[in-house]
Length: 195
Image 1 (tube, rainbow, N blue to C red):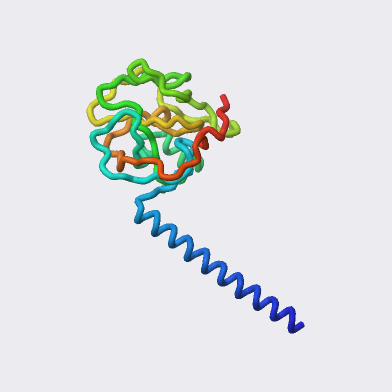
Image 2 (cartoon, rainbow, N blue to C red):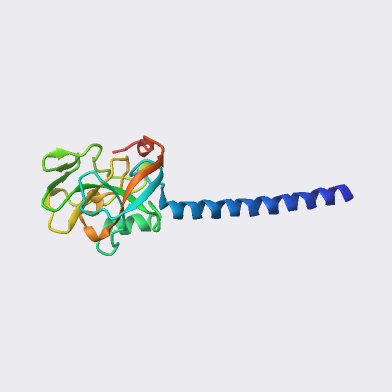
């Protein structure tokens, strides 16, 4: 009986110190990421991994990686749907590419996105979530001429949630320029596209 109690006590202490150690490690990693200006991308928009935020992104350039603020769910039904159905966490940083700038023409169709006649790779619009569980709202198909202050956000990953679903956004949604720090190349294509 004494041996069982002693063993139980040791196990409890081991569990306590393991928990404290993990919490300290998590805090240390969090402090390091904050100091290094790193964010973790867990979405299928861009490769999984860490991205360094490098400050002011202006002037913007086609293809540039940026951290963006979530568009307003009140004016963007696809964003409201994604939040409601938990397709993405509300407080996760969004890393996207600049797909088109003011003055450029974007054509959106079921087959994908063209900017000034140039096709953006892997931009076909998904109609259903992974596994076909739910229909996805997308931005109306058509041709759009971006006005001053508007940008079209693009992400090449399978099941990327970009302007194809919520339309052009204000440049004010762009927070910082970003660059890959440590990523898993090709991870944005792990989920296979359905119909």
